[in-house]
Length: 377
Ligand code: F6P
Image (tube, rainbow, N blue to C red):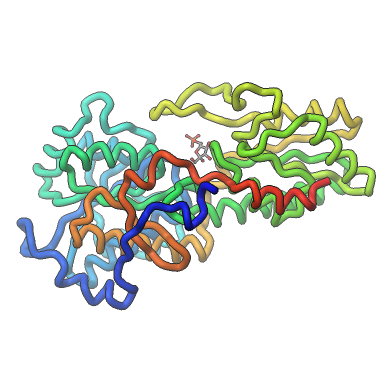
């Protein structure tokens, strides 16, 4: 089963929290800033609520303990390649953990494209007296970070994605917030659906995995949840919708953007590829709605929640997780754990090599889907 704790790669536990802070002032003695490590932070890829809390956690810990100082690269790897650097001290991170987005901006820039590459990254770090990078990002970002680390660049990573699809961590920050937003939206869709006696189709994000769909669908009592891990026939969907309708309910169908019907050879993607060569998803909900209406005779509407799921205030869970990851990532840098990212295992923060975090997506296990499926229809 992919994504179970048992299947995860061996991890190295960081010190317990109390030890973490105690160790910080003594942990770093090298380089050229009187024992204070100078770290450049970047946030890269799609934003996720909690990015600012990671930044604040790392910056405040470095400043409280006198172990590290920070600068920010603007717009992800773009800022690294273009040496677009901003100060990042106590003042800049004041009160930001409750803010969505990222105060240093992000982009889907690949650091190996255009004027980028290992030599350019080394040059920018050297010119600006930067000892190490802290890369906060998802799969694409960490893959680029791994390539740079393999070439000798000092990088520690913090996993980020609302999709919750990174296999080396139990949860990524941003996921809990996205599920909360999607659930609230579905509660609203249900009241308007009830009022009109309509079938409502809600499409959520998640790329190639169905975590957001599964959790928001379960939370909102959806009558059908469709996820990429489980191809389903149109006839089965119509059955579930009709059965809910016949019981007097306004059917709610939650569909993940990466879902495909069993007759489809590929996922629904009409908007080309992103900078990392991955398909831009979206539109399966709009595709399914008229099919459902035609087959069942029930008036049906589709809503694509889209980027609303990534915007606004992070949940308390995400703020706490992100803050802890920021603090632990600083410890990783002070310990010289280059090429490793921090991760959540149970309630502990651990470190795992980039290589172990990449390659295998954390998909929804069959038993989790079957558990939800009992309530469909
Ligand atoms: O990976 C996070 C995510 O929000 C996916 O769920 C979605 O498919 C994608 O990013 C959207 O990307 P963009 O913000 O580039 O449109």
